Amino acid sequence: YDVDRGIRIEIIVDLWVNLRARGKGIGKVLMAAASDAVRGRGARHLLWAVYKPNHPAADCYRGLGGKLIDDLDWVYLPLA
Image (cartoon, helix red, strand yellow):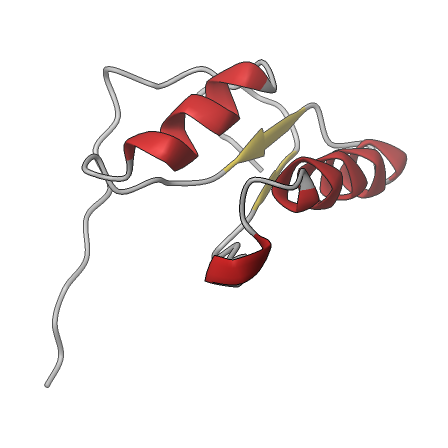
């Protein structure tokens, strides 16, 4: 649940396609399936992160209609 916007969201933690399988549309199929699944559970947004140097992934996500969020930074706390 996104308390800032008052809507249900779901988060993809990690999506990875084998190097030999990349460029064949598999990532698009996986993202479409994820979108359908979360839409079916009433989510209004799907959220995930992409490493900034991973331009091919960012381009793929933008091609799916994904939008980069300029005013949001991911934060983590190393515990070890």
